[in-house]
Length: 333
Image 1 (spheres, one colour):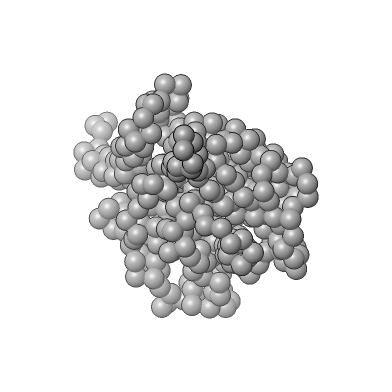
Image 2 (spheres, helix red, strand yellow; image 1 turned 45 degrees about the vertical axis):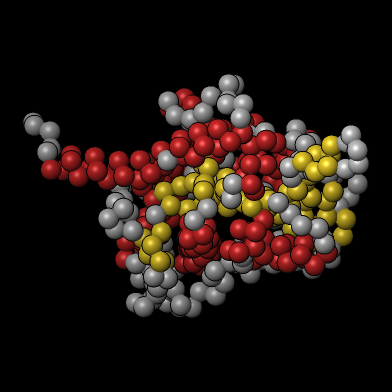
């Protein structure tokens, strides 16, 4: 964006990014803070303002962050841990609206789980021009997932979509890190859809955890159970059997998953474009963008990114289709 000053002068107005950084674990916080600081320093053509939200200290008042902690304007405030990170982000957003009078072009939502869950090399491909285009073109950028990709059994959500509170959900935006135009973020806020759990779960009895009238489709209930018992058992590092001892853990994790998926539903419902950051981190598999030779024109680059992002749709359609073909035409003995 360019604005004109006095005669013979041209001033570039930086894209303004509000960063809602949710923290809970001190060790993770320090590592992600360093990674984000490096990212902000590498994009000094943008104007970042950080709000560091501490969900481990919900009573902390709004104060400027310690000098030297961030390479940009920064503040810190306590959070709201009632629904974990989601209520924390909502609290930070409200505090920012109260204490910071300026208008924002983009909102960056991130938490301290970033380095544990995502390949940060993908962020190296993002330059200031590309980020600035997100606000101008009403585009959201983040990691996009589908049920077919994360489930051990192929799920046909094209013909049989998951339904949450009566609305179809086929894919979602990972809340660990995403950038959204500020006006879109304001429209879908609050991020939290579910705080209390009485409408989802029975109070006792882990073997049949969901209420008969819970507003979740049967295939979605099965997905939630499979996701915790099977998908999270990768490398035997995570995962658990559902029983009376793990019932509270299951309830809390399901609430986070449902909040993330319902947030995705809100975004898809607005009709905004999405760019999937996964196209930057899957080069070894033959997918992704050549980050060493990107198109110079930001408009062409965003168009190319959108087209490449559609490969997620193929990952949603192809596995169930191939499985149906395999079952219809089994290999001969």
